[in-house]
Amino acid sequence: MLCDRPKNTNVRLSLPAVCFVWQIAMIILFGIFIRYDEESDAHWIEHRKHKNISSDIENDFYFRYPSFQDVHVMIFVGFGFLMTFLKRYSFGGVGFNFLIAAFGLQWALLMQGWFHSLDYTDGKIKIGIENLINADFCVAGCLIAYGAILGKVSPVQLMVLTLFGITLFAVEEFIILNLIHARDAGGSMVIHTFGAYYGLSISAMLYRPNLDQSSALHGSVYHSDVFAMIGTLYLWMFWPSFNSAITDHGDAQHRAAINTYLALAATVLTTMAISSLFQKHGKLDMVHIQNSTLAGGVAVGTAAEFMLMPYGSLIVGFCCGIISTLGYIYLTPFMEKYLKIQDTCGIHNLHGMPGVIGGIVGAITAAAASEAVYGQEGLINTFDFVGDFKDMVPSKQGGHQAAGICVAVCFGIGGGVIVGGILRLPIWGDPADDSCFDDEPYWELPEDEESIPPIVQYNNHMRNKDV
Image 1: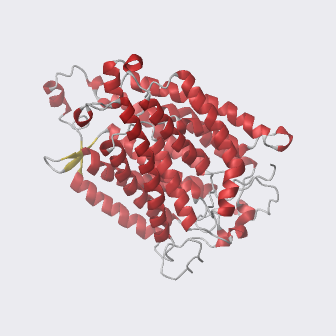
Image 2: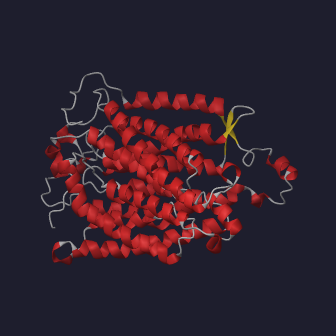
Image 3: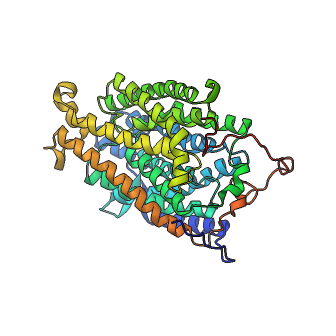
């Protein structure tokens, strides 16, 4: 892991070749496997009559599409602009986010379809609006991983990361949700924990001992932080939709939105307090405001649809604001110095630790569930105690929830080590140590931006000099 990086060779895979080959492969695979489900097919009118459905408004599209819109904005605008904080890597931050998401959602529809939506009568994957939401969720895990290696890899490496990341995601999601029978509506375990440790493991494998050669560009300027804050606000506003998008219609979806809304609000206040408290002169650090204010949304994800209670949501948000902010101040520099993990965006503080906390909160909340709180039918409906799990009791469900955390961490770390080893191969065209965090190697830049003088004062997401 800590050996010298392999030297570049003249044999490199080009971005145009990879994009064209991949898109042709997708066209072929979609032609073989993908079809519309019964609610998006032209036979819907016959399905309506057969099922005695009285109106088109009962089509799942009208229930799910508003949430899909919000999640879609989070993926492309929220995550994209959140990564524009680097002073010379804004094109790469938002542009490669666009590439990963568009590339990954196609593969996600196939991978998740084979596990969840395959019609064994004809061997086809039937997709509808819920599949589109789940594909965006799948892509989110890879975008989280991207944050750890932002500015240090080539676009081809990002496509390889996404290809394997979505494959791993589909497998661990199936194990956690179907085999273990854990509930994870907002993806604290399946999305955030997996994505964070997948990205951190890859970052460790791609460790650059000479990254200080790009230290002048490893930071932000005033306008780049403003653009990143746009991403933060989109994520913050739409996170209730993210956590409630695929929950059961009715009370579960309603409850998930309320719990997320409250946790996010509490996180903002504690983040502001801790950031000011630990900075010289009581000033706020924009790094903390851009990232730690979102940690409550991550941590409440697993338990979002449970009877967490409004005060419980505030407690989760309160704790995560503290933990995430302190992570940026103390833990990120420690990880770089001693664990050789160069976490550009601090994903361990925003997604890793809050994701694990979310899994723990979900396990405790599930184990403490009772008929007095949920009602008999509410308990069965919330935890899906039907079929093979009809005899499940809440205390045992709590154990299954805890097992889900372990699976997510193991897949993230194990998969990241393997994929990181693959990404070390000298064929991907990754930037040199002195060209990291710079758009110039991969983008045509405007003339007036090509000769910016060095900026001495900058914010750095890896070190906090004011503590």
